[in-house]
Image 1 (tube, rainbow, N blue to C red):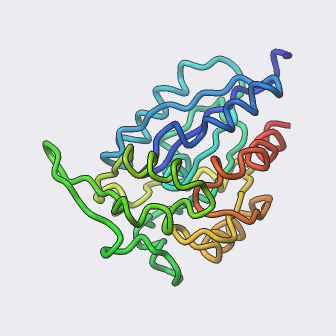
Image 2 (cartoon, one colour; image 1 turned 180 degrees about the vertical axis):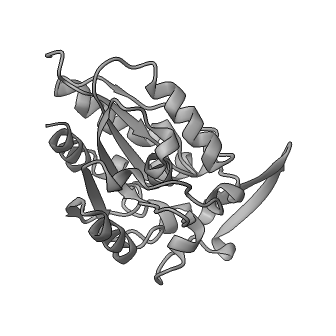
Length: 233
């Protein structure tokens, strides 16, 4: 591995944590890359951006950052990145723009099943945490994974405070100044494929489409890794 080889940082979204990246981390390791998947608090967009930036600041050399789901909102935030970041990869992810919120973006086009009847909330000290109903997790998030994996993911959710989904991005989106790649899941009903295509087109992202649900880093880890490696090149 040369000194110019970038480090890959994988940013999870809402409802799942770094475990969504386990297959990709293993693939990256086999291909000679160093990868990390930090944990985000998922309490506010500003807080998640600050958390990611503090993590990136500990890494020497160039960095490629990939975001899944709401993780795309985080890596779209200019407050989240350091100057070492060279490229962005959006994996069935929001590509949020200035003055937009993730919540209003996901309602812009029809098709999302992240709806009140499929979700539930639980209080935590200082706020409210949003979950998918366990019995709906498979159909909404991961219909192409086996039943046992879906059950485990549903039981071990990383909930998000809905307030984070209502926070506007302040400042010009990172994808306006950095090269970006987008992996679109054609069977995604969390962030519908048509919305992903719209966001990728306006960002000028290099697009790859795969036959997958929202859980593409787990269900299609190899093509996910392929796209990240392409960005790293």
